[in-house]
Image 1 (cartoon, rainbow, N blue to C red):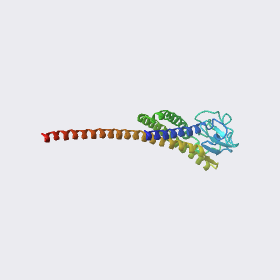
Image 2: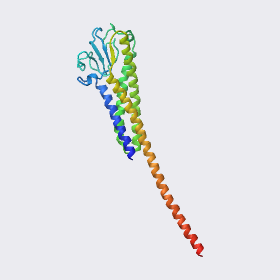
Image 3: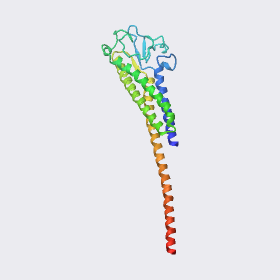
Image 4: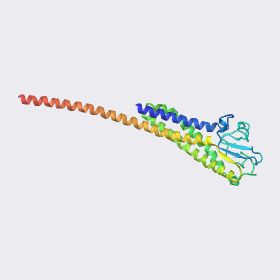
Length: 253
């Protein structure tokens, strides 16, 4: 029971940590001010692109102007604030021009779909992570709760892995395209750190939930085995005692 409770508690902490880190990423671009203004995916010098801010920062909700302390985002960015803002520089959802935009972005929907699906997978991961957090309370006292929480955490981890893979592929390749075009570009270290940390949290939570369930089963099996051995030993001693008494009577006769 003690081991199961420890594993369950550690798993709950990890699941909660993964949820919090994922929410940090989702909040970026929808909320102004510090420290949210540092949670972007990509920052690029777009001063030579017509209609673009001097420094563009991509988030899930908007393209923010990072030239003034990144205080221009929610409601004042480039384009209306909307969920699943794609990474697609030449389209009307970003800058609406191909002037000084890297050629790798022109005539393709690759980055559009990559970053659109990234948002969907993030929401799915958050949903199953929240479910794992609720059922994780059962993991503190039942083996079934531990395995159910492990299943939900596994699903959350899987979709978080997809999100991390799409994010890394799209924005790292995008950064390289902008740099090849002579524009300074850097990925957001905070957003990427949060993303991969959440991935690690849910993976470790899955392992610990499973360990909690298996530990409970082993403990129960060992306890039952000891009880059976105890009663079997008493029965054997009782039989031997009765046998000795009977043999004694025969000798006396």
